[in-house]
Each structure stands twice: as structure tokens, then as C-alpha cells.
Image 1 (cartoon, rainbow, N blue to C red):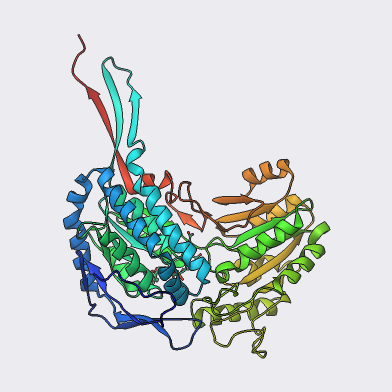
Image 2: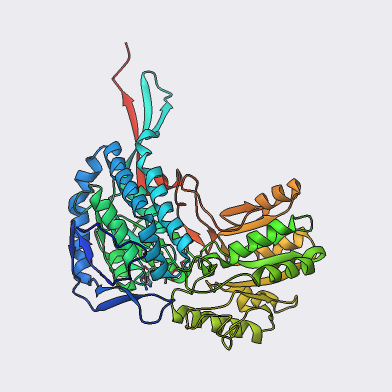
Length: 505
Ligand code: NAD
């Protein structure tokens, strides 16, 4: 395998896409797929043939064949593979970060940061062997102890989205592997190159053949994995519609499911908030990664006393927010992942305006007539702020209700903190929320009242550390949370052992 990567300054080349099955890199036999740079029309980042249903079957068989040997490998040895892979990822962070920026559209700094985050996640789980592996209980019977031990589930299907092409797969694949499972992974077909990089790092680190299998291709491959009789567990991240459908299929056959899905995350700014801090954090939460984070801030709830002041400062800050080629270090925000993703959001903005939303900044057509203000290309969208005035139809406005998954922030005003919390809960989703206040009693109420899986107090709604649980409530999540100790709950099952040497003398 060629681990030599072109330096960041070399002219971009098209990488040949390969499938990874049973420890072999091979050409797919399905239709051709090209992943393209959304910032530069016509630049092909990677291309090759997609996997087929037959490849899924071979990958599942390879994962099954590898399962027993890998499960019997000591946890410390499994962890050592992850630690070596982490070192390889760190060594390639700049080059792979550039590839990520070219393939997905986030800025180079964010791309490098994401690759480094993947290494950090592998390191966290690589050290799992040093943590407790079960529990011991006392017994009501003399001379007995009760132990709870953990075993892998078996073959895990991993289906991942486009927006974090290496970090999200890492936070699923690393715990799956370290707890002794084998994996069949289908990434989003828009970002196959970064998937290949993660598989290369694990192979280079000594992962046995068949422990990880990578299939590049359309959603139908994900369905094939989920319907496969050899599947022992499914971990999915992506949109709520797809996640619910795959969860239904897997759970209907008794296969454990973990699904992290959509979000419509609110930032709440109370009257006593530090406004400079809140403006900066709301801008980061809403517009970094072009708003394509499941935890991005897409709703902003302003309490009346500070609403006008806050909006004034927000708009002043956005005037410096540069949109352009994500590999240009002076750019704050790259394109959407594709022209069709941006087109869907343009339609959503127009619908929201027709339903009574008011344009505060940006908009579907912003900068389109002014080449100096906005780069050319269908994938680019200006940072956009809409306000939905209070009225009987506010809750149903599409910009308030639906996940756009782009750089669109929808504002509503609340009389006080209580009303703000009610508006924040006025969503089918419940992933993340940011609360800006200096008042500890409001923070304590928010901890009880807000129906979210993640609450940030005085920081942006996005962000996740590998050692703590990650996931959402309501339509945002299904099954056990991810990362930290929570990952063990999903990727293992327990055996309760009643242990005695016989009748004590
Ligand atoms: P998506 O649902 O379109 O695709 C996710 C994965 O499912 C991809 O691999 C895709 O190929 C596959 N897929 C699509 N249709 C399928 C089908 N019918 N059957 C089987 N597999 C199918 O999501 P996306 O556009 O890649 O990512 C954006 C979505 O992911 C947003 O909704 C975002 O909120 C969500 N997301 C959630 C989290 C979280 O942790 N909660 C994190 C990141 C992204």
C-alpha cells in the first residue's frame, strides 16, 4: 500500500477509489463514482468504481470470518493497533486535512483539525485496555462473588454521513474495534477519499484482515448491510429519515441499533449575557463548517431587552465573514458539500420568506450579482440570518422547524427566560443547545428544562470531546449514546457470572 502523500503545495491529483474487503484493496465492480471539489467546478478529487451488493456479501463474510480471532485478541493488543493508526493519522494531518477541505468543503484549518480529532479519538479508545473491563458485586450467598463481564456484539455495520468524513467514522470504528467487534463500513459517497485514508491508517497499523471492511457507494449498500443476516449491530449517523428507516429494519430483526440523526439546535441569549462572547460563539456555531454540523446553531432565541443590540452586533461581525475557496487561509467559510445541497437550502430560504420570515442578512440570492462579494459556483451560499416574527404561524415556518443543514440562522424573540426555554423546546429535534447567561439559577433551570442531549453554557452549540457521551434526544437520537464510557454500552453485551468455588467450609 502506498502511504506516501503529495505535499500540500503539489498540484492536486485524482486519487483512485478502491474498496477494502478482507484486507485487500480492490477495484469495485459497480458504476463509476467521482467525488468532486465543491469549491472548484470540475476538479475531481477521487474516482473509481462503486461497490455492489455482492461486495457487501463478501465484506460481511470477511468480517464474520475475522470476528472470533479479533475478539480473542487481548484488549491491549487491539488498543495498540488504534494507537499506531493514530500516530499515522497525526503524521498525515496536513495532507489529509487538505484532501478533506477539497472533498467536503470545510476550511483547511477545520479539515486539519478534524483529522487531528480522529487521531485523538483513536488514542482515547486505544487506551481502553487500561480501564475497568467489568464490575464486581457482592453476593447474598457466602463464598460467592457476582461478576459482570463484557463481550463484543460481533459484526457491526457502520453507516456514516458526509459532514465529518473521518472524525465520525473514527468515533464509531475505534470503539467497535477495541471492544472486539469487526466492522463493515459504508461512508457517504460524497467523501470516499477520507474513508480510504482512515482504513489505510488502520491497515498500516496492523489491523488483521477482515476486521475492517470499507464499501464505497450509494445508500442501497447501507440497506444491504442492514438487511444482511450476519449483522450483529448497527451504528448510523445521518439524517433522521434514513436513520429511522434503517433503525426500523435492524431493530425489527432484533439487531441492536445506535442512530445519531438530525438537529435544529438553538442558541438562547438571556438579558444578562456577555454579548460580545455570545455574538462570537453564535457566529462560530452557526457558520463554521458552512453550518454543516449536526450540532450547528440554526435557531437563535433572543430575549427582548437585548434583541436589537445583539442583532446589530451580529450583523457587524458577519460583514467580516469571508466566503470562498476553503483552502485559502483567509477564508472563514467554504461551500456547501455540493451544488444540489446549496440549491435545496436556497429553496428552503425562499419558502421561509414566503411564509412570513424576514431577511436580516444574506439570503438565497445574496452576492450572486456581485462577483467580488461571493465566489462563483452553485455550491456557495452567503451566511444568512432570517427572523420569524411572533404569530400563529411562527412555529410552522420551515426555517424554524426543518433542518436546512447549511449556513442559515433563524431568529425569534422571547419575552423572558421561561419563554426562551419554551421556544427552544419547540422542535422535534433535541441534539444540542447553547445558553448564554451569567445567572446560575437560569443555568440550573435549563439543565432540567431543555430537552437536549448536549447543553453548552456560554459556548457554541457545536463541539464534542471523545471521553464524554455524545448524542441527542427526541428525533435526534435513538439507542445508546456515542463516545466515552457510553460507547461501551452499545458495542458490548454483558454476561453476569455467579462465581463460587463450592460450599465454603
Ligand atoms: P444521509 O442520511 O443522507 O446519509 C447518511 C448515510 O446514509 C450515508 O452513508 C448515505 O449514503 C446513507 N444512506 C442514504 N440513504 C440511504 C438509504 N435509503 N438506505 C441506506 N443508507 C442510506 O445524511 P448526510 O446528508 O450524509 O448527513 C447529513 C445529516 O446527518 C444531517 O441530518 C445531520 O444532522 C446528520 N448528522 C447527525 C449527527 C449526529 O451525531 N446527530 C452528526 C453528523 C450528521
